[in-house]
Length: 317
Ligand SMILES: [Mn+2]
Image (cartoon, rainbow, N blue to C red; front, side, top):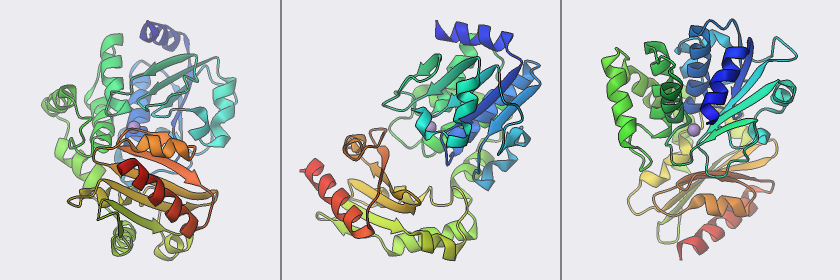
Protein backbone atom coordinates (compact mmCIF):
# COMPACT_ATOMS: atom_id res chain seq x y z
CA UNK A 1 0.00 0.00 0.00
CA UNK A 2 1.11 3.57 -0.75
CA UNK A 3 1.25 4.48 2.96
CA UNK A 4 3.69 1.63 3.64
CA UNK A 5 5.92 2.98 0.89
CA UNK A 6 5.66 6.52 2.24
CA UNK A 7 6.69 5.31 5.68
CA UNK A 8 9.68 3.45 4.19
CA UNK A 9 10.73 6.56 2.24
CA UNK A 10 10.34 8.77 5.33
CA UNK A 11 12.62 6.41 7.26
CA UNK A 12 15.28 6.67 4.51
CA UNK A 13 15.08 10.43 4.04
CA UNK A 14 16.96 13.11 5.97
CA UNK A 15 15.74 16.33 4.37
CA UNK A 16 12.13 17.34 3.73
CA UNK A 17 10.40 20.20 1.99
CA UNK A 18 6.69 20.61 2.64
CA UNK A 19 4.19 22.94 1.02
CA UNK A 20 0.55 23.17 -0.09
CA UNK A 21 -1.56 25.19 -2.48
CA UNK A 22 -0.64 28.86 -2.77
CA UNK A 23 -2.68 31.32 -0.68
CA UNK A 24 -2.87 28.64 2.00
CA UNK A 25 -5.88 28.28 4.30
CA UNK A 26 -6.12 26.58 7.68
CA UNK A 27 -6.22 23.10 6.15
CA UNK A 28 -3.11 23.77 4.05
CA UNK A 29 -1.15 25.29 6.96
CA UNK A 30 -2.45 22.85 9.57
CA UNK A 31 -1.69 19.81 7.41
CA UNK A 32 1.84 21.05 6.62
CA UNK A 33 2.64 21.83 10.27
CA UNK A 34 1.16 18.50 11.40
CA UNK A 35 3.40 16.65 8.93
CA UNK A 36 6.41 18.76 9.90
CA UNK A 37 5.77 18.09 13.59
CA UNK A 38 5.47 14.34 12.95
CA UNK A 39 8.81 14.36 11.11
CA UNK A 40 10.42 16.33 13.93
CA UNK A 41 9.05 13.81 16.44
CA UNK A 42 10.65 11.06 14.35
CA UNK A 43 14.00 12.79 14.86
CA UNK A 44 14.26 14.42 11.43
CA UNK A 45 16.29 17.61 11.58
CA UNK A 46 16.06 19.16 8.12
CA UNK A 47 12.48 20.27 7.53
CA UNK A 48 11.42 23.36 5.58
CA UNK A 49 7.78 24.37 5.19
CA UNK A 50 7.49 26.83 2.32
CA UNK A 51 4.89 29.56 1.93
CA UNK A 52 5.23 33.01 0.42
CA UNK A 53 2.64 34.31 2.88
CA UNK A 54 -0.05 32.91 5.10
CA UNK A 55 -2.83 34.17 7.38
CA UNK A 56 -1.32 35.66 10.55
CA UNK A 57 -3.86 33.90 12.74
CA UNK A 58 -2.03 30.57 12.16
CA UNK A 59 1.35 31.89 13.32
CA UNK A 60 0.70 30.53 16.82
CA UNK A 61 0.44 26.90 15.65
CA UNK A 62 3.13 24.43 16.81
CA UNK A 63 6.37 24.61 14.83
CA UNK A 64 5.26 27.56 12.72
CA UNK A 65 8.90 28.68 12.96
CA UNK A 66 9.62 26.01 10.31
CA UNK A 67 7.65 28.10 7.78
CA UNK A 68 9.94 30.05 5.46
CA UNK A 69 9.50 31.95 2.23
CA UNK A 70 12.70 30.53 0.71
CA UNK A 71 14.16 27.04 0.69
CA UNK A 72 17.44 26.39 2.51
CA UNK A 73 18.57 23.51 0.24
CA UNK A 74 18.64 23.03 -3.53
CA UNK A 75 17.73 19.37 -3.31
CA UNK A 76 15.66 17.58 -0.70
CA UNK A 77 15.30 13.86 -0.15
CA UNK A 78 11.53 14.16 0.03
CA UNK A 79 9.08 16.77 -1.19
CA UNK A 80 5.57 16.68 0.29
CA UNK A 81 2.66 18.62 -1.20
CA UNK A 82 -0.55 18.71 0.83
CA UNK A 83 -4.12 19.85 0.17
CA UNK A 84 -3.32 20.53 -3.48
CA UNK A 85 -4.75 18.80 -6.58
CA UNK A 86 -2.00 19.75 -9.05
CA UNK A 87 1.52 21.14 -8.99
CA UNK A 88 0.29 24.24 -10.86
CA UNK A 89 -1.39 25.41 -7.66
CA UNK A 90 1.87 25.33 -5.70
CA UNK A 91 3.71 28.67 -5.84
CA UNK A 92 5.83 28.61 -9.01
CA UNK A 93 9.06 29.41 -7.12
CA UNK A 94 8.75 26.08 -5.30
CA UNK A 95 8.18 23.76 -8.29
CA UNK A 96 11.91 23.09 -8.66
CA UNK A 97 12.18 21.59 -5.17
CA UNK A 98 9.43 19.18 -6.07
CA UNK A 99 11.11 18.33 -9.37
CA UNK A 100 14.56 17.95 -7.77
CA UNK A 101 13.46 15.81 -4.83
CA UNK A 102 14.43 12.13 -4.70
CA UNK A 103 10.87 11.16 -3.93
CA UNK A 104 7.62 13.14 -3.99
CA UNK A 105 4.49 12.61 -1.89
CA UNK A 106 1.08 14.23 -2.06
CA UNK A 107 -1.93 13.92 0.24
CA UNK A 108 -5.11 15.58 -0.96
CA UNK A 109 -8.90 15.63 -0.86
CA UNK A 110 -9.82 17.63 -3.98
CA UNK A 111 -12.29 16.15 -6.44
CA UNK A 112 -10.09 16.23 -9.51
CA UNK A 113 -6.55 15.35 -8.57
CA UNK A 114 -3.75 15.06 -11.15
CA UNK A 115 -1.93 12.30 -9.17
CA UNK A 116 1.25 14.27 -9.78
CA UNK A 117 3.58 12.77 -7.16
CA UNK A 118 5.49 9.48 -6.96
CA UNK A 119 3.29 8.51 -4.04
CA UNK A 120 -0.27 9.87 -4.07
CA UNK A 121 -2.76 9.55 -1.22
CA UNK A 122 -6.03 11.02 -2.46
CA UNK A 123 -9.50 10.74 -0.96
CA UNK A 124 -12.09 13.19 -2.36
CA UNK A 125 -14.62 12.02 0.25
CA UNK A 126 -12.51 13.42 3.10
CA UNK A 127 -13.70 16.79 4.39
CA UNK A 128 -10.12 18.01 4.89
CA UNK A 129 -6.61 17.00 3.93
CA UNK A 130 -5.92 16.98 7.66
CA UNK A 131 -8.54 14.27 8.16
CA UNK A 132 -6.73 12.03 5.64
CA UNK A 133 -3.55 12.65 7.64
CA UNK A 134 -5.27 11.46 10.83
CA UNK A 135 -5.99 8.03 9.38
CA UNK A 136 -2.67 7.95 7.49
CA UNK A 137 -0.62 8.60 10.62
CA UNK A 138 -2.69 6.01 12.51
CA UNK A 139 -2.11 3.46 9.75
CA UNK A 140 1.63 4.16 9.73
CA UNK A 141 1.79 3.76 13.50
CA UNK A 142 2.90 7.37 13.94
CA UNK A 143 1.92 8.91 17.24
CA UNK A 144 -0.47 11.84 17.03
CA UNK A 145 0.81 14.04 19.85
CA UNK A 146 -1.12 16.94 21.33
CA UNK A 147 0.81 19.33 19.03
CA UNK A 148 0.10 17.26 15.92
CA UNK A 149 -3.57 17.01 16.90
CA UNK A 150 -3.80 20.80 17.29
CA UNK A 151 -2.49 21.30 13.75
CA UNK A 152 -4.78 18.63 12.30
CA UNK A 153 -7.81 19.99 14.09
CA UNK A 154 -7.06 23.45 12.69
CA UNK A 155 -7.27 21.95 9.20
CA UNK A 156 -10.42 20.00 9.93
CA UNK A 157 -12.23 22.90 11.58
CA UNK A 158 -11.29 25.24 8.74
CA UNK A 159 -12.42 22.95 5.92
CA UNK A 160 -15.61 21.74 7.61
CA UNK A 161 -16.58 25.33 8.46
CA UNK A 162 -16.56 24.29 12.10
CA UNK A 163 -18.25 20.88 11.57
CA UNK A 164 -21.18 22.41 9.71
CA UNK A 165 -20.53 21.33 6.11
CA UNK A 166 -22.19 18.18 4.79
CA UNK A 167 -18.72 16.69 4.24
CA UNK A 168 -18.29 16.34 8.02
CA UNK A 169 -18.07 12.67 8.99
CA UNK A 170 -18.42 10.64 12.14
CA UNK A 171 -14.62 10.36 12.13
CA UNK A 172 -14.43 14.16 12.17
CA UNK A 173 -16.31 14.33 15.47
CA UNK A 174 -14.51 11.31 16.85
CA UNK A 175 -11.15 12.93 16.17
CA UNK A 176 -12.30 16.24 17.70
CA UNK A 177 -13.48 14.36 20.79
CA UNK A 178 -10.23 12.45 20.98
CA UNK A 179 -8.21 15.68 20.59
CA UNK A 180 -10.22 17.25 23.39
CA UNK A 181 -9.40 14.33 25.64
CA UNK A 182 -5.72 14.79 24.71
CA UNK A 183 -5.86 18.33 26.11
CA UNK A 184 -6.12 20.18 22.80
CA UNK A 185 -7.90 23.50 23.28
CA UNK A 186 -10.65 22.88 20.74
CA UNK A 187 -12.63 26.05 21.44
CA UNK A 188 -9.50 28.20 21.09
CA UNK A 189 -8.65 26.56 17.75
CA UNK A 190 -12.25 26.97 16.63
CA UNK A 191 -12.27 30.64 17.53
CA UNK A 192 -8.89 31.37 15.95
CA UNK A 193 -9.54 29.38 12.77
CA UNK A 194 -13.01 30.68 12.04
CA UNK A 195 -14.10 33.59 14.17
CA UNK A 196 -11.15 35.87 14.91
CA UNK A 197 -10.59 38.56 12.31
CA UNK A 198 -8.41 41.60 11.98
CA UNK A 199 -10.03 44.98 11.56
CA UNK A 200 -9.03 45.07 7.88
CA UNK A 201 -10.67 41.68 7.35
CA UNK A 202 -13.80 42.97 9.01
CA UNK A 203 -13.76 46.05 6.76
CA UNK A 204 -13.35 43.85 3.68
CA UNK A 205 -16.32 41.71 4.69
CA UNK A 206 -18.37 44.80 5.43
CA UNK A 207 -17.70 46.12 1.93
CA UNK A 208 -18.49 42.74 0.35
CA UNK A 209 -21.78 42.50 2.26
CA UNK A 210 -22.69 46.03 1.28
CA UNK A 211 -22.14 45.18 -2.38
CA UNK A 212 -23.88 41.82 -2.41
CA UNK A 213 -26.13 41.52 -5.48
CA UNK A 214 -29.00 39.07 -5.89
CA UNK A 215 -29.99 37.26 -9.09
CA UNK A 216 -32.59 34.75 -10.23
CA UNK A 217 -35.22 35.36 -7.54
CA UNK A 218 -32.53 35.59 -4.86
CA UNK A 219 -31.08 32.14 -5.63
CA UNK A 220 -27.69 33.53 -6.63
CA UNK A 221 -25.55 36.13 -4.89
CA UNK A 222 -22.56 37.93 -6.36
CA UNK A 223 -20.03 40.19 -4.72
CA UNK A 224 -16.52 41.35 -5.56
CA UNK A 225 -13.31 42.95 -4.38
CA UNK A 226 -10.92 44.89 -6.60
CA UNK A 227 -7.19 45.27 -6.16
CA UNK A 228 -7.80 48.93 -5.38
CA UNK A 229 -10.27 48.06 -2.61
CA UNK A 230 -7.69 45.74 -1.07
CA UNK A 231 -5.03 48.41 -1.26
CA UNK A 232 -7.32 50.97 0.34
CA UNK A 233 -8.26 48.60 3.16
CA UNK A 234 -4.70 47.25 3.57
CA UNK A 235 -5.88 43.64 3.15
CA UNK A 236 -3.36 40.94 4.17
CA UNK A 237 -3.05 37.30 3.09
CA UNK A 238 -6.16 35.23 3.76
CA UNK A 239 -8.31 38.14 4.86
CA UNK A 240 -10.76 37.72 1.96
CA UNK A 241 -11.18 33.98 2.56
CA UNK A 242 -14.47 34.31 4.47
CA UNK A 243 -16.25 36.44 1.87
CA UNK A 244 -17.16 33.62 -0.51
CA UNK A 245 -19.37 31.97 2.11
CA UNK A 246 -21.39 35.03 3.10
CA UNK A 247 -24.16 34.74 0.50
CA UNK A 248 -24.75 31.04 0.89
CA UNK A 249 -25.95 31.52 4.47
CA UNK A 250 -28.90 33.63 3.34
CA UNK A 251 -32.20 31.75 3.27
CA UNK A 252 -33.14 30.68 -0.27
CA UNK A 253 -29.71 31.31 -1.79
CA UNK A 254 -28.40 28.30 -3.74
CA UNK A 255 -25.09 29.63 -5.02
CA UNK A 256 -22.86 32.42 -3.75
CA UNK A 257 -20.16 33.84 -6.01
CA UNK A 258 -17.23 36.02 -4.99
CA UNK A 259 -15.00 37.65 -7.60
CA UNK A 260 -11.64 38.84 -6.36
CA UNK A 261 -9.34 40.76 -8.66
CA UNK A 262 -5.79 39.36 -8.85
CA UNK A 263 -2.86 40.04 -11.19
CA UNK A 264 -4.00 37.35 -13.65
CA UNK A 265 -7.69 38.29 -13.72
CA UNK A 266 -10.64 37.72 -11.42
CA UNK A 267 -10.43 34.73 -9.10
CA UNK A 268 -13.95 33.36 -8.63
CA UNK A 269 -14.98 31.47 -5.51
CA UNK A 270 -18.27 29.58 -5.64
CA UNK A 271 -20.14 28.24 -2.61
CA UNK A 272 -23.28 26.15 -2.91
CA UNK A 273 -25.86 24.50 -0.70
CA UNK A 274 -26.60 21.67 -3.09
CA UNK A 275 -25.73 22.05 -6.76
CA UNK A 276 -22.31 21.02 -8.04
CA UNK A 277 -20.34 24.23 -8.48
CA UNK A 278 -17.14 22.37 -9.39
CA UNK A 279 -18.99 21.57 -12.63
CA UNK A 280 -19.51 25.26 -13.33
CA UNK A 281 -15.92 26.14 -12.48
CA UNK A 282 -14.57 23.43 -14.76
CA UNK A 283 -16.25 25.20 -17.69
CA UNK A 284 -13.99 28.14 -16.89
CA UNK A 285 -10.86 26.02 -16.47
CA UNK A 286 -11.12 25.69 -12.68
CA UNK A 287 -12.45 23.06 -10.31
CA UNK A 288 -12.67 22.11 -6.67
CA UNK A 289 -15.26 20.42 -4.51
CA UNK A 290 -18.97 19.95 -5.18
CA UNK A 291 -20.06 22.69 -2.78
CA UNK A 292 -16.92 24.87 -2.88
CA UNK A 293 -15.03 25.51 -6.08
CA UNK A 294 -13.15 28.19 -7.98
CA UNK A 295 -11.72 29.40 -11.26
CA UNK A 296 -9.92 32.40 -12.72
CA UNK A 297 -11.26 34.52 -15.56
CA UNK A 298 -9.16 37.21 -17.18
CA UNK A 299 -11.78 39.78 -18.16
CA UNK A 300 -13.41 42.97 -16.86
CA UNK A 301 -15.62 42.85 -13.78
CA UNK A 302 -18.74 43.37 -15.91
CA UNK A 303 -17.81 40.52 -18.27
CA UNK A 304 -16.94 38.21 -15.39
CA UNK A 305 -20.17 38.96 -13.56
CA UNK A 306 -22.28 38.33 -16.66
CA UNK A 307 -20.46 35.10 -17.58
CA UNK A 308 -20.63 33.44 -14.17
CA UNK A 309 -24.14 34.56 -13.26
CA UNK A 310 -25.49 33.36 -16.63
CA UNK A 311 -23.73 30.01 -16.36
CA UNK A 312 -24.96 29.51 -12.79
CA UNK A 313 -28.52 30.32 -13.86
CA UNK A 314 -28.30 27.56 -16.49
CA UNK A 315 -27.17 25.06 -13.86
CA UNK A 316 -30.01 26.03 -11.56
CA UNK A 317 -32.71 25.63 -14.17
MN1 LIG B 1 -8.42 21.41 2.15
